[in-house]
Length: 146
Image (cartoon, rainbow, N blue to C red; front, side, top):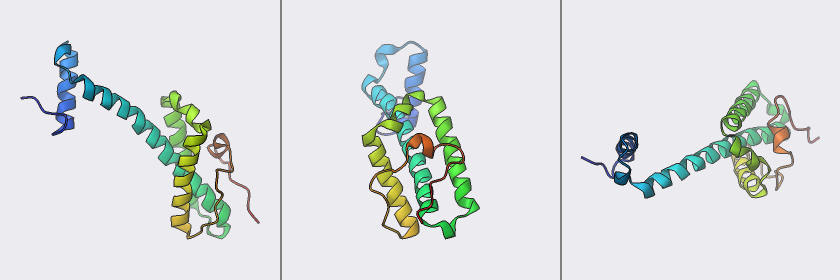
């Protein structure tokens, strides 16, 4: 019995993989397979954007709230940087995103929103003040504001 894409995507994916492996190409659900392949790329992009937003939010908190700096913030920044490097190493086609102004603007908005939510502050820069290559560098911290 065949599962439909809409009813059970996991069962459908197993069936599609079995059809591919057995060479039954005419039975494949090509349109949905193409959508799923595109979604893999989008998922990788979202993962990178989420990790960058968390890192940048913590850098903002570090810069704007020096009295509240903690080992927890340092740990989060170290963890996010390592995860970003791993993602970029495994998926090098994502590297151009780090210099894409539109992507940076969207991701920066997420970082500011997260930092504002966690700090109660609303005086963050309109655009990312640091090159992302610098922000992702191990041990780098933004300069104090005061």
